[in-house]
Image (cartoon, rainbow, N blue to C red; front, side, top):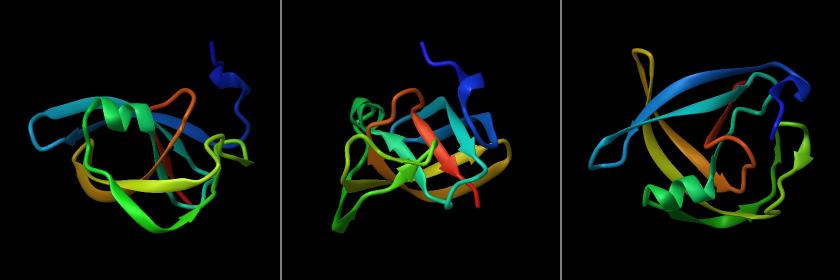
Amino acid sequence: MFKEELLDGTYTFISVEFNDGISLISTHALVDCDATGFAFADEEFVLGYNLSLYKLTIVGTFKVIDGHTIESSIITYLTNLSVNINVQKEQILIFNTKLRHYPLVLGLT
């Protein structure tokens, strides 16, 4: 079991909702306040909800949460979601990768 108290940095956890085109889906996200501003989704979460995938023409690697390069190494797909956080609605591009403990990680600079 993952222990949140072991995380370094500034993090918070929020409830988010998004529409997959059929229904409203509620989940939670880790907000990384020390991040580069990128958002990430767990690929099993994305596939489990059959969310639209868009192939990147330029693939890349990213460092996430603890500053380490992600396990899946190269990111090749992203998802475009309309996300509701409280009363705020945002359209965001989310890179798909293997996350260990959270369905979504939202980076704030």
